[in-house]
Length: 640
Ligand SMILES: *[C@@H]1O[C@H](CO)[C@@H](O)[C@H](O)[C@H]1NC(C)=O
Ligand SMILES: *[C@@H]1O[C@H](CO)[C@@H](O)[C@H](O)[C@H]1NC(C)=O
Ligand SMILES: *[C@@H]1O[C@H](CO)[C@@H](O)[C@H](O)[C@H]1NC(C)=O
Ligand SMILES: *[C@@H]1O[C@H](CO)[C@@H](O)[C@H](O)[C@H]1NC(C)=O
Ligand SMILES: *[C@@H]1O[C@H](CO)[C@@H](O)[C@H](O)[C@H]1NC(C)=O
Image 1: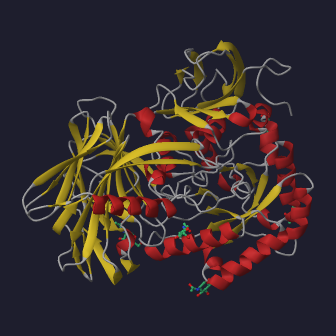
Image 2 (image 1 turned 135 degrees about the horizontal axis):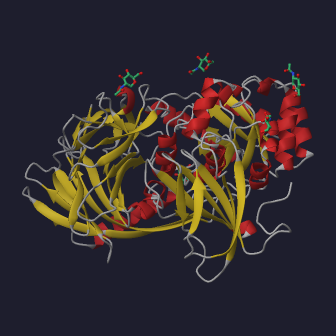
Image 3 (image 1 turned 180 degrees about the vertical axis):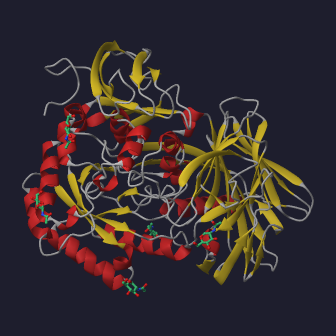
């Protein structure tokens, strides 16, 4: 909380030194913008005291916020605010590093307008409106006390209709629903609540303008939210997940309600959510280690109870220079220490699966942590939270704080999404909240989730190469292959960012695909930089370039939805003044019905301005490594 506290103190100092104006109860207007930047918020307060703002890009309104307010057992906190004082605007810069993510160093300026107000019954509250280089956001500060927040009236209204990309989660508890395309006016055709992140093609005069609705700040002081929408309307009103309410104890803020506004390239760079969370209190992060993980549960559900089989997954990790093996549901405390000794002798660390109800009391958390430390296990995957209400965020925050103190890493499954939390809790290496490879593949989903869910933080999709969940060799396997060729399967390991990347595949299948095994060997899972590549578009194609400084190499991953095609790869992430060897592993250039053959192509003299044609099968994909100095066989792939 230190950074936010510092901001608050700055604001308070500014307030006391400046002569703050009292706002009369009539329409007034303010502009919030960073110097020389195209995004601005035009804020008004109407005669009822309600705040609204237009979020503009280059002078065009793309989305507006209105009715900013909440209903509480302590009286209404907005939309009508009284006796508001506009503070001087503040300029802040969020500059921080993370061990994982699309990039590891972050720098983002923000301009904030704060209004100090009274609620309907005369208590102190506030409204913050914040503008960054890539969007607008607001939040409300609540009166101190003990009471319940029951509902929210705040509403986002899009300036016009446009294509939208969203997830339909009928359970609305674990964010594992299927992704679909709709439009703003239709929302979900079954009238269910729309969940965030919600991606919209703003379809404005300025082409290539996208809006991503998201929220930040899930520290247990609030629950998650969804958006209620009536068919035909451009308006989306906040509602609390699962009809939950919020118990206030003390002085809290609502989560930031964020509209990222950017072209696709900058949308892929956004960290608006993480930027506006508290900086981490963990000063020594050297024990926090991203890495690729071997993992047996996906292809063989019963294998985690078999220590001998787990040793074979450890052997795979050692062979491929992956730092971890995750043992999922079924492990036995009697053999875990033995497996850890075996793994450590091969420079592999062990991670263990748990159910969340084994972590539901302070005693249970302490006892699990004591076991993990005693056994030498480096982290836990904790599963089945299955809710987005405040109590779950409270439980997760408690677990994260205790695990941080013990220097143990965390992966949450069956959970709401991270919403930028990896800034505050960098030992949170991944989080599920995604319909991953444990459900049969879907080519449309593959090309949407990098622009949506993955922008909230690491996404534990568990990319498999070929094998469907449970090792089913029949119709499910055919569907999996039809929706994602082996070229695509390998491409997912780069396309989908997860600081712990669990490869859900058997040692036998991986060894059988020699090119894949060579690509997987030493595979990084955390990046100095990531750049969305040209010709990417949600629902059709996603191609990304990533830089890994330790080996001074560039990695590329691409996944596609639709017919076989020749993709023009433009490796724009490469530095402009150097020439590279590009080593590509892609779908074999022959029969589209052969979903499993992959080939290697080595291209020389590639630079940031090159275009390299790569053939992909229907629902295909590829991966590639760029290096400056070739290995013995003229390429960049590792030897086995
Ligand atoms: C970080 O430390 C500050 C000061 O001790 C504390 O108020 C805050 O709650 C801590 N933040 C987290 C995320 O633990
Ligand atoms: C969300 O899930 C709850 C519990 O399963 C259900 O009662 C509710 O109708 C769902 N809400 C929406 C909007 O889908
Ligand atoms: C355990 O794994 C080993 C090694 O793969 C295998 O030989 C054995 O049959 C497995 N045991 C059971 C009970 O499945
Ligand atoms: C915690 O989980 C255990 C095991 O499922 C259950 O018996 C217990 O009631 C739970 N306790 C709380 C406080 O939820
Ligand atoms: C290995 O590849 C061969 C030839 O493509 C295939 O017949 C066999 O089933 C594969 N084995 C495994 C374990 O994938």
